[in-house]
Structure formats: C-alpha cells, structure tokens
Image (cartoon, rainbow over all chains, first blue to last red; front, side, top):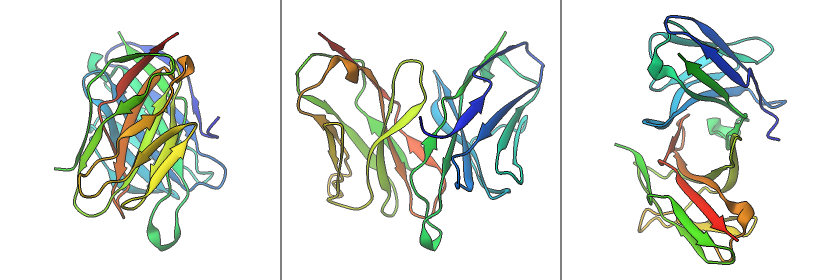
Length: 116
Length: 112
C-alpha cells in the first residue's frame, strides 16, 4: 500500500459526459501528479500540483482540468468524454527534497475509466 | 527529445532463470532513473532507483546500475519466481523537472 488513495476504482460512462476522479496523497506529501495509461499512448504525464498550485503541465487535453484543494487532495475533471479517453488514470504524490528537487513518486491504485 | 526505451515484450521465462530487461534513455542533464512494477490489477510500485552515475539500485533481488557512458539502466535478477510476473516500467526524472517519462513497459511472465 503506497498511502495514495484514489476513488472511484472503476467508472463507466457515456460519450459526452463529465466525470471527476479523486486522489488523496500520502500524509505529508505536497505534490500530486496525474498520469494517464492507455494501450496506444502508454503512461503519460498529465499535470502536477504543489501545495495547491499548478507546477507542470504535460499532454493534458483542454477538456481535462485538475485542481488541488487546501487539504491537499486533488481532483481530475474530464469533460466531453470521447471513446479514446478510456484509460487507467493514476495519481502519484511525492515529498519535496531540499533545494527544490523532488523525491520519488508513489502511485495510487488508479481509476479505470471506460467510455461507452 | 527526452525518451526512455525498453526492450519489447512480452518476455516469458521459466522459474529460476536469469532476467535482464534492457532500458536506455536520452536526456539532457543527469536524470534520476527508476524501475516501477505493475502487478496484475494493481497500480505502479517503485521497485528501485538510482540518482547518479554508477549508482546501483536494488530491491527484492532485482538490481539496476546507472551507466552514464551507455545511457542505460538495465534491470536484472539472478533467479526469477512466478510471483515476479508483472509489467515492468523504466522511467527517468530530470533534475528540477516534475514529470516522470516512462518506457513502454515490458510484460514478464514466469512459468513454474
């Protein structure tokens, strides 16, 4: 158990809908990362938050957005869903090292999204 | 651009065989390197890491050495078990960067 929790575990929805995935980082970790794992694209970084602020952005679609709340949990919002958005979405968290570098990332169990 | 390349799978071995999964990277600067493992139906677990050249990461009988001259971080285990069956991902993290860049993953199956 990494200490990172994600809900729900599975989500099945229809094209055009909107869903919210939730992540709680390990106790004490300030950084939260979102990754998408799909068969055709592999594991790709989407976005990172640190203590409530967006820090880095990867291959995240404009239809997707995220935020980190004061209690440090994070939500990934996916809207106008398409069939191709079906994937496993992982959240990870890490603690900062001194000097602004970052420690290894610990991953949650993932949310499997199926868009029908 | 920066990338991580793993040997293509799937890899199938018999129990107690020697395992090597190759991983090479391209990156500017000096990345930290990681191996993650994903067991069936589960999330990613950090298996081992190395943060500078010639470092050797090790865990659960697995080892990988950070080779700057060959830009490689090959995963090895001397004697695999059925319980090692999983997908293995090599990844790199650039100093000061936020995102892990993963290889495509190598599915390993160990037969009894």
